[in-house]
Image 1 (cartoon, rainbow, N blue to C red):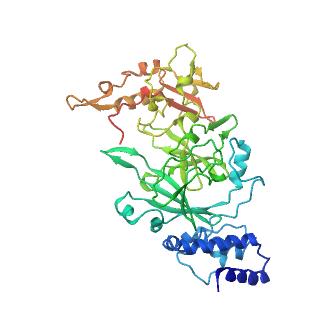
Image 2: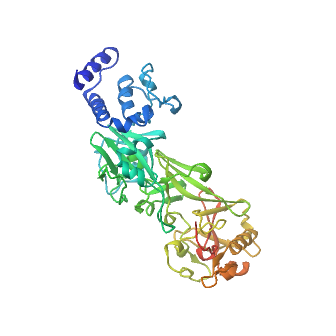
Image 3: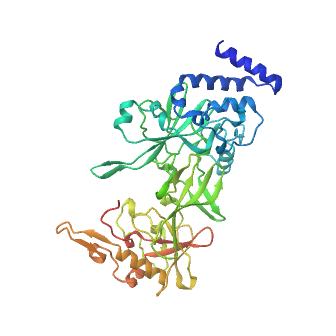
Length: 460
């Protein structure tokens, strides 16, 4: 019996006990089974759990087209069990409800209300697993045996499905040349269907957003047409009334179109949710502070892939120290040499090498700060008053942890000998190196001008 006969027969039998299955649903199931045959080596290698993204879709649809309850990942079986009811087959998420009935096309401009509505109810059909499923044994769908033997150590996970395609995330480690990082860890997105693997280069529904410029698989073809409503960032990420993160610079970063791997294990950083936007969550990514009572973090967006899209410094209110207008009339915008590392302020309670953008002092006393200027968007800027203990602690740590190597003698130099510019806390304060801008929750977000951050020989 051929495939069409089998599927039509199954439809007729099930229709006697349940509501009839329409031709569109049957077509999806037929495509699923056909793709499963052609790509069998890919899906068998990760077992029944990996097949859930596509094969489970057909069984789930046939058995319970009216079901809306998500399947608990704990119920997923490592091997298929014919005795299980079809609803026990793993499913990434509920069948998405569409936000609107318009054409599923990219647009040059999309208002944020529409973007946020589609984040909760995508038009584009993707369904994401609650947790990524390891699919390392399926790497042969993307690479040749020689590439897997002699190339970097890849990590592949099954993250969801869309129609008759399975969606995979490929994590690549940092590469080094002569002990220098040539590019850091990144994530690539692939779909695999009956025609083979495709590298998803432009996942956003907005045409002006960045596309990935390269991909690693030698077997995949470039796909710049497929996109996902649930991976489209709003232009603004509202955290509180009158306070929002922009995403303009973030969306222009070609290296992070689907985010970076979220650190795990001993390298894991605490993620504090601060805003839920459908499939996306804005988080504060905690970074260890070097000063007692201080909390330091950077902003990021957690995606359904469980990756993080770091919010660019340019998109965080208060970090552009060059845009501050100081009440004393001094133009401090050019005190630091131009350079990517020096364009925005840093978190004061951490090292130069940290990714933290903001420090909050739990013991902040407004009486120990004074208003000294305003940001380009009209926010008050405060600086420490004389005798401020937090400012003294920041200066002391940055001074004491400055160090470099004399290239002529090989001697290790520290403090001002290493080039740190402020020998005393008074000089540090006079330069207005440390300043604060009120954050979304009323706390004062503290920032450090880059020239006042500790001098280091290298960041490793």
